[in-house]
Image (cartoon, rainbow, N blue to C red):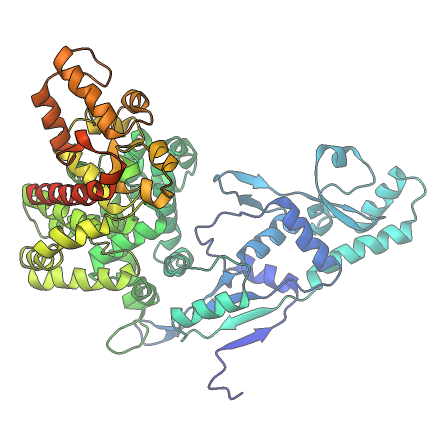
Length: 599
């Protein structure tokens, strides 16, 4: 294999050297947004393997590219540990007594016990702590100030019948773990992320594959020169706070962080219970990066944070500095209370008032990118609102950002800057939401039994936006029903269709769904429409209520119209079901069309 094709080097340093490199910062652990997720038994297992001399898999490091400094000299890149983080963290926690942060962001200690007679490991528990035959925390053995001779003497004094030489030998074997070798694969700094990702996945079938966002997070975390470690924390903390506002008190205790601008910028989240948009770190990076750098591919962010000059293909310190400063500003904009809350208000004003109605996160991400972009351009608030609302609903209806969003993000943001939002939005809407879409494609797409379908959600949003009432309700609105998390109900009852031999895909059609009060649904039970509509007609004549409060034929007609129920429902039986579905899909599509035009 010629050197030209070898894209990595392999070394087998003792674990001790690895510790030294990490403590001196020569290898950086980027804590890629992943707290320590192993449970203690996994740590015990790892130590057991090392003790027995079994291989424990390779660590993968990736050296940052060397960058040119202003004075023309070159500074060599740090090595980033991109795979093996959990293993290294486990070793440092168990052997060196380091504290780790668990998945609930709590700081914990991991304590592993060793039995020098049986030469086995266990996770420390209260029983082991009381049992003199165990050394309840092995980090004592690795502490440089511990005297092995004293340790052995004390142990033998407490455990009658033990032999000093045997115990000494056990302790020495335990300490020898750190001179065991561990394989390190170092990847060439010139490799692009795609290749690194492929290598990562092939070497590490167990591991969670890293995304572009993970690589970006590691580039951010290891760059202390430009405050990357603080920026990474800000992103982490914001995501955690938006899900759990009570986490604020924990962040406040991080005294270094709580003095930063980031902290004051996100403090508003402690009182926020909105859950329509709870961004992950990937969402935050996407939005901040695309709105600031006018590019859609996160691999470009990784390249910029490494100092890549896209023209000359060199790596320059100036570009690293500039990219960090711009990203920091963009993250600050993302967290801004006014921006964030206005954006949510726009989404709600389109009828998407509940988190259950939000499908793909990327439609929201791009809508926020658009919002921030138009703000930067100084557009009037009322216009921003309209463009963002329409763009969001258009992208949901056409599934614009499902699949591979990055290339579409990239294309859209460039066109918005090149053509202006007015012209570009106009051409996209005309192209994707044509008459053919409303009259043929959309009714066809609604031939589905997936209740989480974007089309059914858009239908619900349309009903909310138009202040529609629930099916057969005179007072209770669709919005109220959705906000109290009511279920969808079947117009042709599910039980009735099932008894008549229809399959799940047939009775759960979204065109058979309405949002209704559960008491109305219960009253309908498994009666076919012809039967229960006869009763509703007599309710309108006599005023004796069995379904909701509608007692007036005109009000009934109006309720059926707003719920897109086809004419003739009062005579329908099983035979009319297929025809009913087809008619209702068309009516629902027309409603969504009117709704979209009203945005």
